[in-house]
Length: 105
Image 1 (cartoon, rainbow, N blue to C red):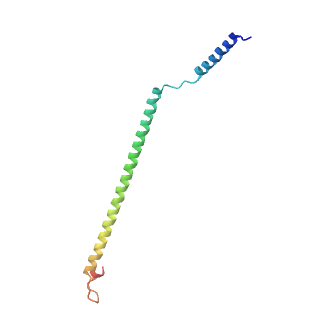
Image 2: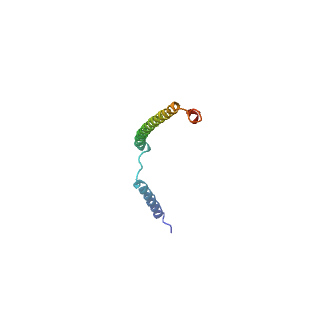
Image 3: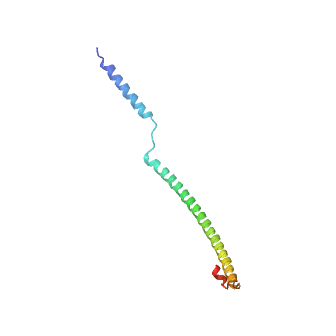
């Protein structure tokens, strides 16, 4: 014979096991409770990155300006040296053929 009470009890037992499993599972925090922490930490991370990027950018700008100053000084010195050489050659007397020294520049 079929015993309805046993079948019914086993279903209740199975159902209660499922409920126990669902209730014993770790609960995830509310979505909204994590959002501010993650959002704040990402803002903090990006603010640190922005500061580092600005610092590196400023350092690079300073190095570029220094290098350009050195190049200008070097160029000015070279220009003065070349001008001095040209002026000295202009003041030299003409060569044997009577041509002026400037033509040889």
